[in-house]
Length: 521
Length: 88
Image (cartoon, rainbow over all chains, first blue to last red; front, side):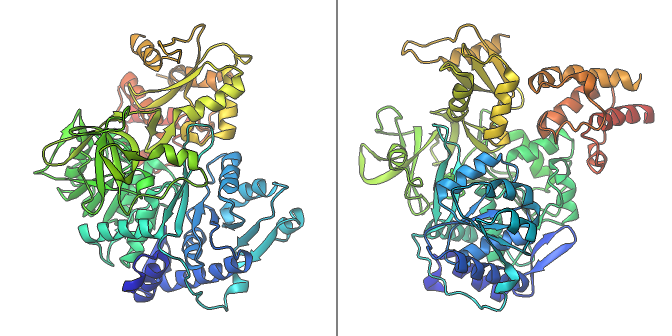
């Protein structure tokens, strides 16, 4: 085991054997034991192996949060592949783009995914291998160019030998890019195992724990829940429905002990007046990540969990789930501008601050750059993009640094505070949104270069898009196009047509002036 | 206070969104789901409820509310406010 500590599949397999009688997943009243999940995952892994011999290509996972979906993730790793989650809530075109960019040919699809699956299979130029719980004659007849495999045909075959190496990708996710195409973030076994080791050493988990699972599988924070839970022999508790309004009763009904969500989930509970004293007495450990955690919310949550540990995690997907942490408790309440401190970068990892214009080292304040074993090697099949974000820093030329784009301030203790972004990236409920990606799509649709989206954060954060000129003056048509192409969290809430777009001295659209316009209203 | 008054108030608040989605408020029926349709996200929906609470001087029990299945529909939302008002 120790020599395979940097291979996720080995670690999961070891854990699945050790905790075979424990419950690995619970969905409502239905549960799946570790041994049952191992069997399911092994069958799927053999189906994957029958369909795809090239281990460098990831396996696509399409489904709701079902036993099959989670087993499919583990199966991909057992088959020495990376997994790449698709999203049933995304538009078809977004899922199609992810399939094309990743090169995935094998899709593990659960029974909830049929509508989306059919649309994806309409793709004429590619032949997919679809792994299903049961064969579906109608599907097979309708799509003769694709291959369908039923899991139960592979039940008799035993464990596969795990061939993955540390540098091989464990999971591939996509995040909003600047050009209209999502950026592929391949995270290696080395990356994710180093993260797991850090968190397992820093906080203790045990087989009696009941982990929350609030993230979409396309969001890398879901990896934290799944893998920490399964490496600890604990139970991953899936919300029975996707309603964000029922999270409080989910915590209580499922008797959760470990919580992880974006701060938005806690903010929503607060707005519903559910963050009452001792409301979540069973939670012994709460993690937040993905966006700014308001100090007021941390304070209320601390009371709701009877003063037990709250951890504010920080980190971009490129640095594997999270790379900084601040433990918020009754004695430690550092914040700035009403936002909880990001804490210190994990000690096994490295960081520096730079001047974003000259890329020279700075101290005290600057753009945060990261290096170390949690940092990915670069973006998927895009050297140009990688060269932009993985750079050499003047004054520290001996290694490559990942530029986070996050502007931070460092205090005397080495604790970091978020001060804003240097680019057009914003957060909507924890999701990374590059405003330029929205602009690129709307420019095409509206037929004008003068398009600028901004974040209106006066109340609940929302995206506003200003358009000037162009052939289409119909806001509805623009929104319709956005809904066809973009995930729900990237769709502008308001489209504003203006006669004249404010320009700055460099001849670029002056987004600050647009923002100012809002505040003047 | 009538159902119609509450409904009209809600629709007034939603006016900007309805225009954007090209939805004619006259054609909306009561099972139209404000969240599942994509018209509002969960945060915006709760903000809408908060505004209605203030306007009609009611305090909604959100915990109980979240257990019902249709509270995010237009008709469901109107009923909540009406029922809460009547219970007070």
